[in-house]
Image (cartoon, rainbow, N blue to C red; front, side, top):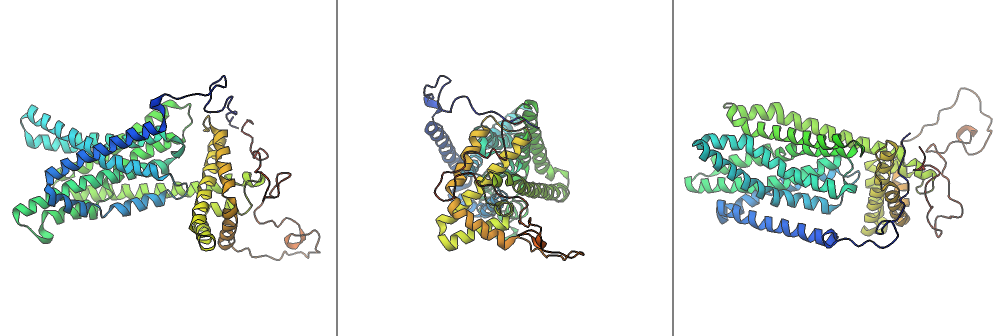
Length: 465
């Protein structure tokens, strides 16, 4: 079996000698958040001015109104994928802002500079535009979007634990990028129609809207999701596999660039090249990735049901909870039950309890497979203490959800006569406890006033190999 990390020799925030450890000013959280917020705000102001200058005020407003339409649907889809272990909103907000502001600014500046340089060097503007769209743009744009995934992977590592997290961060970043790009394209199309006098379905605006918003709103998210999957698989790899953790994100990034280049170059494949690429590559790739992500989500739910019974034995959870926490329907019913009987604050408390329990299950799964980090024990205790704080509302709500969603058990009369030996079991065998394990209550705890269990070492010892 895998060997898990031992308890830290000295608590975080202190040096090896026990003296308080004072971080440098640039390591403080408020400095980092302030610098990041300032960078994104400045990028947003610059990109706003650049887009408005290209499209004009009226074109900008039209482009903004049309470009915002697919954004709520895409964000809701990625948030739905992340329902098993929902990440914090600040990560999603950062990802969207990075894609819409920083990545879009990098792409516009770098693409324009590269295209002009190629046109000057070759004295062939048409060739420069084609090369810029099929080669330069995929490299620049996917690299800019991948930076957001990399930053979350490096600095919010606790929230980045698998493929679904990579897909969600990458998809939200690309949604922000596509939002800004659509404003630019739709605003320019509107300006073209204003000059030519075109109106209605025959206008350039209508055609651009149909291609970018109706047919392929998922194009940019689809490209960048390959990068997210690469980072997600790297997150699942053991820390000592450094080469794998570096190569997998690069492979995902190269796939994203390749798909992006094929999409941008589809207009050069003939009159029906766009539709051929759309039908032969984009739609199948979208279907395969959707299946992969949903399948991964189902595997996560199975991991929850498989790992949490150990914490039932240790007294942290009640017997119905592993089943209820491993079902999305039961989770939803638990939140609804809490909201109906105790209020919205209680529903949020249940949602927090569900998220912490899922994180505990994933942490234990990584530990059993030899992929636990150095802070395994500390993180486990933090999550279990958070569970304990929300147990008063969460436990009855999850018990209700388990009763409602549990499959009915139809008793079957055995072919031999029964004589009632034993007590409590179906047909007198004394082991009819519905979940296959007996909860062990820690000594001296009545579940109401006594402190939480010290640690679930009855079921799980991180020092045992």
